[in-house]
Image 1 (cartoon, helix red, strand yellow):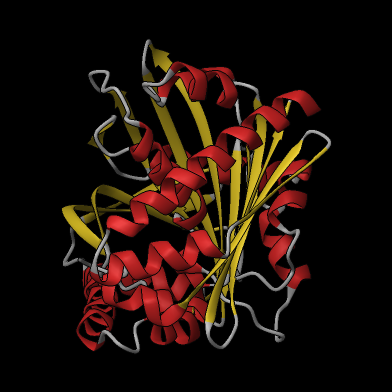
Image 2: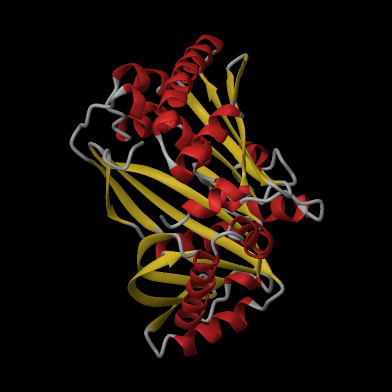
Length: 357
């Protein structure tokens, strides 16, 4: 859960998280977990009335069988949410735009042309304490996937190869560099594969994941119905997500605190969304446990952590303190049957000064 607990070994569309040495969590630090759970997807969602939930769901339905899915209305994210959040941080907004231009130069793929992106992830556990995550993304928009891939071949200066698979051509770009996603998050990209699935949909990921997406498109078998329903609960969300949770997945997170780990081990699904009004980010996270007692236990734990979080926020100064206080003040934790729900809202003006710091 904390950065000190999981060591990033490699981050590409397929990456591994290895369990680091056990670090005992202090109670005040656990409060940060609550904030992290709520705030992690916060920067990537906006609320708008001009949405197309049917199209978004349709793109999700084309994903191969997954353990987690997410949908992103990327055009709205880049054109509406990010400028609004970063209005008070023009230097960071300029870095976001520069990172997009850099990615376009290297691959010929312009994220601003994507209308929507659907992401699917599969988890496997090849050895003790190791979680392997294989992801694939499907993108659509007002563009020709074939033309974009062709542009990428030129932009990459020949640093690519082609692979034929099931009647499709996969273009594999060798990047071998750190990419700063939206000017905010650094991650390592080795190979990026791209393949048009049809005239409107482009598959992106590592080569194995793209091949898997091609297989799914050929079979026309629709998977992930439960997860798609969770990810689509808020039709106005720019990002919605749903995931299945297993005991092995929780165990590999190496929480470092037995009571918290016991509570989290009872989870079976998580889902959520984040939206924006003109002034706020509205954040929603839900977790489904094995039964009502397990959900209540986790809810009681989070209520306790919220109180400690209030104490911690009082010790923070500057922009961090302002954001933490508003998030905790607006946080509502509700348990209904076997489901735990967390909602909070923070002013967008409180987030911009922190991004990139």
